[in-house]
Length: 293
Image (cartoon, rainbow, N blue to C red; front, side, top):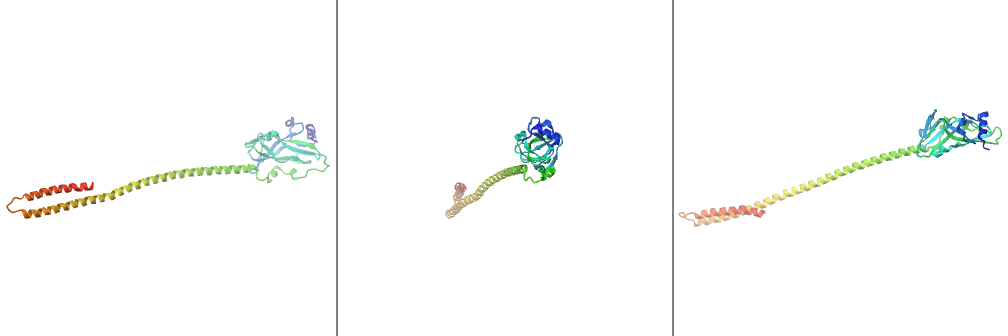
């Protein structure tokens, strides 16, 4: 049988079933009472460091993080009363999921400890003293002495946090964010390297282009230098050939003149030879130039 609010409040007044209870917080709940966030909590993303909260303090639960908490109220369950915890709907709507501590056995005397996962993609804030879970109480038919004797009734919140809860989604999220950051950094490095390689390639292509131009110019100069001596030799060869022809003609003329000339006669032959020599010399100077062209 589920106990109503009036029955619960009578138990609180007579047996102090719940310590530090605030009746005003549960005015709208006819069959359950609200329990608040206490002064101790922890986050697995912070290596389960114990966080002490005082009045008006707020704890921020990051996405995918595991939040460990202790209630502000302490419960002292009678031997014939059991309890059931559930997360308040407004926290569920924000993306919190309660993962354990739903059953409270008869005879349990301690604060209540719980774990909440933030499954949303935003930070969720909870204030110290804010209602976080609701408690329903049930009448049982346990025989006297059949009470809870487990370790949870004797441990402190610090001991609870030292338990191994495995790798939380928060840690995985931190690792993932770190990996994403490393990937982004590596991508930036790759882009920077690619830009530097493009600049080096452009400089190399410019150097190759300039080297090709220089080689073309050098080849043209070498060709000009190689052709010029051949033309000069050809011109000199033609000129020498004409000079030889001139010398041969002059020699023949002198021989003829020496045979036909007497001692008393005038020397027109010599003048004629000189005139012809001048004409032949002028022709020799012009002929090589025409041959070269």
